Length: 363
Ligand code: TRP
View 1: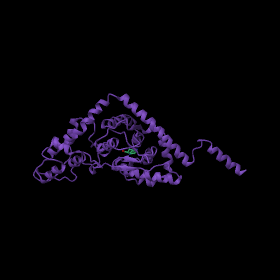
View 2: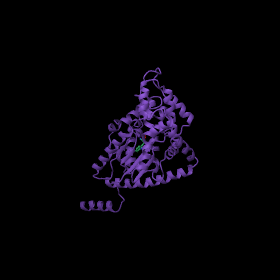
View 3: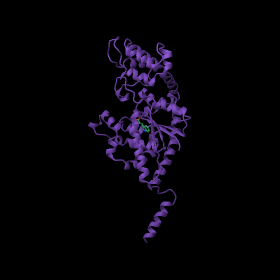
View 4: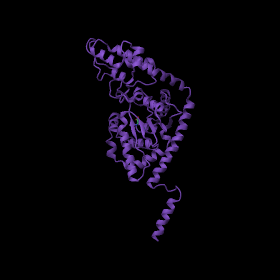
């Protein structure tokens, strides 16, 4: 079996630390350390529009912002095919056919969709149909490329479950083996499954305004780290590390080499945690260390991004070439899907012959 990796992001803002530890870092690892046949990274602008219909300029601008983030974290256009979702017309066609295999209650039971509906406050105006069915269009994104490996954050697991259900329903209904089942690759480190926001909210999210962006300048980063809410305590009181955002972040990003460089009093995070829990170690110190670790990780990304901002024509060309290749692959799958469904009227003479025979038998 082929190994086809695919993942995507909605272009509604620059990518942040949550994306980095939850998925981008894993993509770079897959790109550099694993064998695969194809690796697609899609900018899901059509999905972004499902809850930004009135704000297309935001989506338009962020297609390039997200592309800059991809390249600056080290995704390599020699290995990865970058593409724009809305330019691949086979995707909405597949979505239409798959939507006959999914019930409305099943869609609205999806926990990620449920959360998003609650968070976005759709309930007053009603949920747009396009939004409610975006899990089906996501199944199209994945199956159009016969992707089997999907590096995503934990919140995407319900989407992949939905996709597998559609794959099974399709293959069963049309007695075919055209579509391929996919599985998620989640981040290896538990803390990275879902990074909380700097305000303590369970999720780092652009709509909540609690993000550390990959492109944040050092002063902005410093301010954000300093603003992280911690539990008030007397310095000599034992520190609590459970649900302590500073330690959640450190567990997601720091390595032993950071201690050697910036905090040689400790060998590793376990030693720091043990000392913190004894009391006497203030949060200011931890914030300083976290800032240095984040600078160590984010500075090269920020610098590369600045260089890339001067190469917009070349970057758009990469995206155009990738989209064209992706579109061809998706068209091929659409063709197979239509054949399996028996709606391939003009591929060869088969339909004509079959229908002639049917009428001949009647006469
Ligand atoms: N829903 C994903 C997100 O919000 C983006 C996405 C769209 C996606 N299509 C996909 C992710 C296909 C993985 C595979 O981040």
